[in-house]
Amino acid sequence: MSSLLNQVVQMQMVLAEMEKAVGIREIGTAEKMVLGAIVDLSREQATVRTKEIIEHSLLETCSRPSLFRALKRLEALGNISKSSEKRGLYMLATAG
Image (cartoon, rainbow, N blue to C red; front, side, top):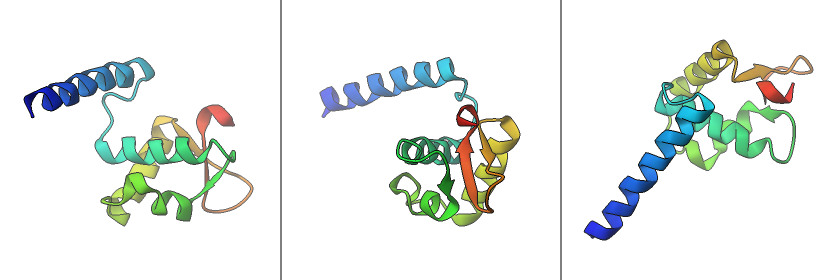
């Protein structure tokens, strides 16, 4: 178990460095999960629906209010933006 736990800790340390490198180290867990879901969904399409974000496996344990707060915060930070095409569509800020 301690070997596996050591590996988990090492992965967390690598992840922390990667988060720092892309500038998301200081945002909350909900924001990271929502951003991760949007990044994942954006691989197939430029814009993603709120419904798709809500249903993403990364957000299984995230409450709806937390998810919507995270969307607002990510938008305020400039990580994501709303699509001007239709309501309920988001995109990565770098994609727009």
